[in-house]
Figure (cartoon, helix red, strand yellow):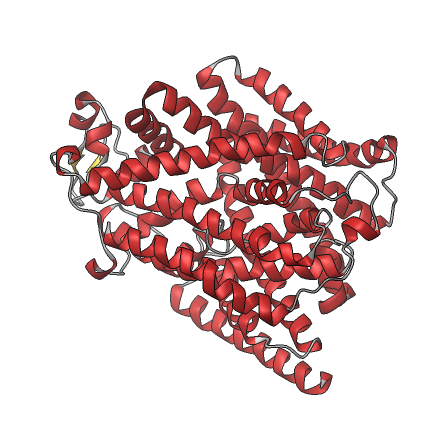
Length: 508
């Protein structure tokens, strides 16, 4: 619990101190913003700052800082370090700088920014890559919340249709008509879930009368930073680089760079950037921190025994390898996957009413992210083809191929639910690849503006190493030997860094 509390304070101090350093390096001023200069009452429109913050928070959150944090915490207390340092020095800086650069270029998207600073070849690749990513995320975030909602009321396919129709509205309608009105309510539900679970977690660990028999203290950083999951849960992946891909949202996520341009088109002042872009990411870091700690409680402190029925607990026995296994042979992390942990914890800790509200918060995040993904896909396609989006008819026509691909992916997912889990591993790697690309063009921007580029260069180098190593070593990708993967990834990272140094010398 001490590590959790210190981490909370560190995130707060990161926002109060380091965000001001990043803001000073970038240098926001009083120039006219795209929302004013290009106002069209559709995509470019001034919204209140608090409303933009809520939309940005929900756009970037999704289920990533919940499910990703739960699975990332399987590696042990080292997850705390990645969430705190990754969020402060990597993710929040990444979101702020990329969002502000987008604002300086009329709110253009990730692919266009990549082309401006890394070349037209990179731009073309990113147009295709980001479009695919947006449609994959959109399709995934239709079915996932539909499953949860059907557990509360109604049929699964009914919710699939309702959610997809909602996505059509959020993609085509002016941003203030649906997104600007609905998202703040969803945000309150999401924040209730985080605050309520955080309070219960703290009380269970600090108030003697609420202590649960058989639950060990939460693991702390000083208990060890090794791969606890491999030793205690049967986790097959190595800590590096898997931890840094598993926890993306809540630490560093390139997906955010596809969402920030939408908000860059709605801000009336550049000085709103720090609380909106940097602040929303720190808030997401808090969400990830709470769920990572709950995961530690559940798996490493024996908390799963207290929130499950005695009959279920008795089904688990120690196998020949020393790992606890259910009657069907599954280990703890195979039996209690991330969605099961969420449902079990919410129902046990918050009761029926609180559980429904908390689950609605968890449902709101993927629904809003999915809707924003389809909207981002429309904007990416419009930019790539240089098409105006002034009429509802033009927006709908441009969105039709996006929806068609989304429906095809959704149909495939429903027919092959386990297969999509494999695809999602590539999506997780893809979002970190986008983070590396974003950090590199942020670095180029700083060099061209003759500003301190180290704040983005160091995270760019690190993320390049992570995504290269994961592509080589992961069982879901190339599955090459660890030593070969690490050495090759290091060589690629050094080559990218050397290329940057060569470019910088010639650029100056």
